[in-house]
Amino acid sequence: MPFALSAALVLLPPAPPVVVVDRDDVEVRESCTLVFPRPVADADGDGVVHVVADGVVVDLAGATLDSGLDRAQPDRFAGQGIVVSAKRVTVRNGAVRGFKVAVSGDGCDGGVFERLDLSDNFAQRLRSTKEKEDAADWLYPHDNDRGQQVDAHGAGLSIVGAREVVVREVRARRTQNGIVFRRVDDSKVYDCDCSFLSGWGLAMWRSSRNVVARNSFDFCVRGYSHGVYNRGQDSAGILLFEQCSDNLVALNSATHCGDGVFGFTGREALGEAPCPSSTIDFDDPLAWYRRRGCVGNRFVANDLSYAAAHGLEMTFSFANEIRGNRMVGNAICGIWGGYSQDMVVVGNEFGGNGEGAYGRERGGVNIEHARRARIARNRFEGDRAGVVLWDDEDAHLAKLPWAKANGVRCEENEIAGNRFRAVAVAVELREARATRLSGNRFEDCGAELVEERCEGTVVAEAEAAPDADAARIAELLRGLPGSRVAVGARAHLRGRDRIAMGEFGPLEPPGGDAR
Image 1 (cartoon, rainbow, N blue to C red):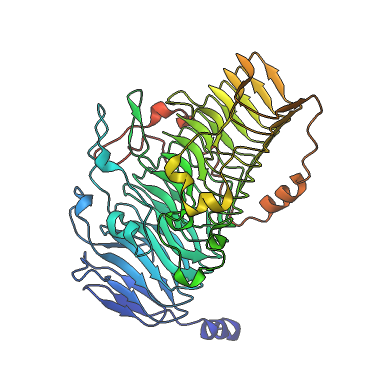
Image 2: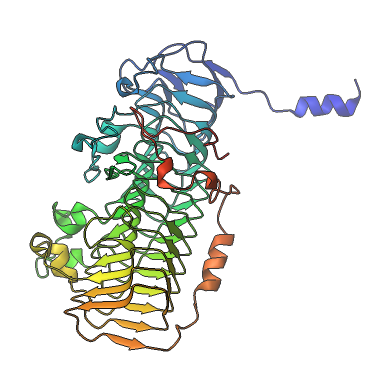
């Protein structure tokens, strides 16, 4: 053997050991390849495989860990497949199916979860039918500090109490939830496809400064029967609940969902649940609630269309930016921003929203109790209404600490440089104060401006100022991780009529795979 070849062989790193998973409670303490000779159920509910050592790489080598439970009854799936309780662990290259939670990480700072297929895990049996909604199917994700979301609804991948995690090329089908974060910060989710689910593609709870890019979270829906009812029942492509701030959500597709994005400031932030006692300033009891909520999130260049309810909902929150998104054919409205303040809505495309609306909330941008919103350079075409801003009496909400600390008047909003074409009512203002309209264009609209009990409205002809943030946003998009093109990958499935529900969730039509 030539010397050069023999030296190269000597320098090759040794192959990682093989760990045979043929029983429950297998511990992993070093980098290895897992082998699954037969199905293994999680008998004690704490995981089949336990990764307990820092810095190891666990490779499934294309194989599948299967619980062996009846795949025809996903509402009976139980236990966990792979549980990571160490830091800087990589889990990759395989599938996990038949569990309540396929892969779980707790305190797994620096973990990498990549090239995983987490399809065919837990999903509730839905009670709603084509003819009638059943209220028992609502998800109510408002309490989760003890992990109630995953306990009740399962997950393909569940991460808790971690930072600097990377999730990439994760796939999920025929299950309820794709990726669920609880108290996860400074992490990245990209190039994933968690679609045709009955709950959430990605759910975040008290999770901030994360980057969510180039993912497909399409057809994450329940509570929909085309032409009969459109409820959504708290399903969403992306869920952000209870003080999720400074996240960047860009270049994702979340179409045909309950909401494309469903953001809510949280019961604690509102004062419906007690704030941490250590934070109370007894000289100023409302101090903790000021500007408390989902703050400073950026939603850029996503497709949030064909929702059963809203393209994007973000309520009781501050300084969220919504730029360059597509929101077409949403049943109720493109953006629902009740009680939001300092919201920036710039350069988005709205079209045909509001067909399934009920009540005042309808059309393109709807913000009840809006304060200092800036709605500029958007295109509206064929919506039931373009921009609707209003004030009203919500006695219960007005008494909450959040409302007392931040105010609830609809005032000081700007509507500038927008184009309205074939919109039934372009701008509707109800009990709004000091609204400024400038440089808007109207073509074939039923009404350009409808006002009721408003004060200080100013209408000017001046053009809107140039977008000073355009360069910043372009640079932001150039720096995103990943390479997958998610927006438009399912363009052949456009329209809410393509949502068809089965016993456990939405049905995937032929050609539904966007990979």
